[in-house]
Length: 156
Image (cartoon, rainbow, N blue to C red; front, side):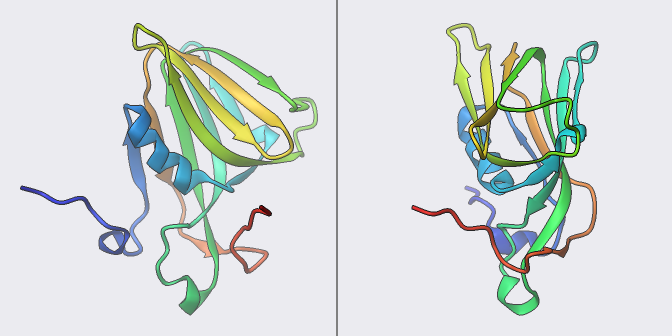
């Protein structure tokens, strides 16, 4: 019998996670919460059926935050098998706008296809129609000190 991995076992290793179902996606969503990115870092490749974001992800999994301060890391959030992309509350012409990711959720259809919803702060959203759920989150740089020096907070 095996047990689930813990954050402590990951240490300082970069994340490289995949989600093939809604439960797995909850883990990725929690780790990507409060990631920020400029609108120019959203890419949809229709021929490859892939939508990707280059994020500045807050390292929620960092158990040593008290010792060295809050950190972020550049990460790629990629969604595969994308058939259609739509958005609201995002001015795609203003590529300098910084967006903040709040959550990533999957709503399945009866046939296994469905929709991935990326909810953004400020009432923005990106909706991806997918043939099947396939999401990856991969860190692509070393962690760096968060400019604010603090963990993000959400008023209740």
